[in-house]
Length: 163
Image (tube, rainbow, N blue to C red; front, side, top):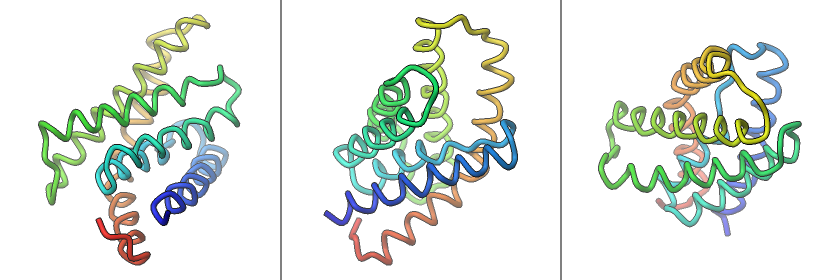
């Protein structure tokens, strides 16, 4: 129960943070905090809570998006499963670089899945995707990733949710 409340609460906080950052800084610094929450839920609580976080974050993102409904929903669920698969081969416990490698792979999967889903309905340019979406999202998310994961760990430990 506490884990679901934690995921719902931080989903709203992170969505508002993304919204405020995008409106103040612009499109060049847009970390994907919701995806980091999905990844953290998989690290800390397992696949079930990660799927719940992916569903909730995807629905939240799609509810306020002007794009097709369900694109973020589907891509976040695929990313939650991708984290589980990557955790079988890469063990990030205590190693910052392995954790960043997993986050980088999941961000790439998220951008590629969303690109192909957009490509079904709209005409999109790969150059535009790479320059205006992929590079800013990867760089900014990797910059804030460790700080965000450590912040979430400390919040979990303060709320007496045992990992």
